[in-house]
Image (tube, rainbow, N blue to C red; front, side, top):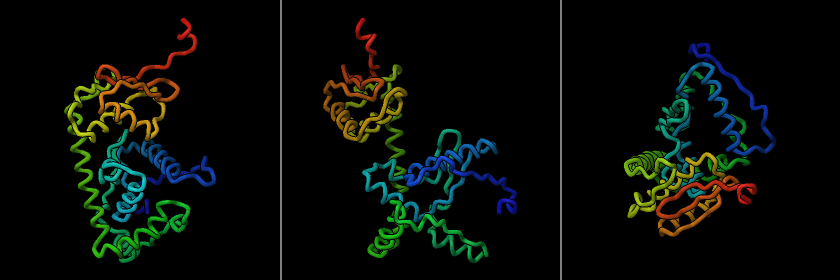
Length: 253
């Protein structure tokens, strides 16, 4: 097919795969391969075949883990990532419509054998939940999920633009709480998440730890919370900043 289209074929194998690897690990390995292949052919655009069924599956999966608008707006038709852009032109088309079109054109459809396994959350959603949900809806539930995804993306973009206007991150890398005073909690949550992501030396922050820090910011309550082995998130004087953990030698001076 690549030869017929005049496209350079790139093939890879996940040699570091371990038995029972998670869906997230497999996804990370897949996109790592895509990045390497794109560099080899000097491409900045990756075209993906996600369709309307994928939108509904992803939405149901992310609802189960409590995602906000950013997570529920995935997969996006155009997604900017470091080094390029990911394009998904088929999000308005159902899988069965794609398969039917290929058969009409005489192009064989290959179903990945891993799609039949019940060992993956997405497969369980696809095989058990989605068919029942579509029957129960009494309408085109896939089109409804796709429309909801579009509206969630609009809301997410609006909140991001509002946060950009407030410029809550100071030049020193601190989060200026005064700039968020009186703003909706959703905006403060985004500002805090943006601040955490901007701390190169910070370690992981649990969901509960994040919520506790958010509550402290909303209440204006001074606090100090560990951000991994490197340091702490310190809220004091209307400013949230990263404080490096001192070594034993530094403490003894």
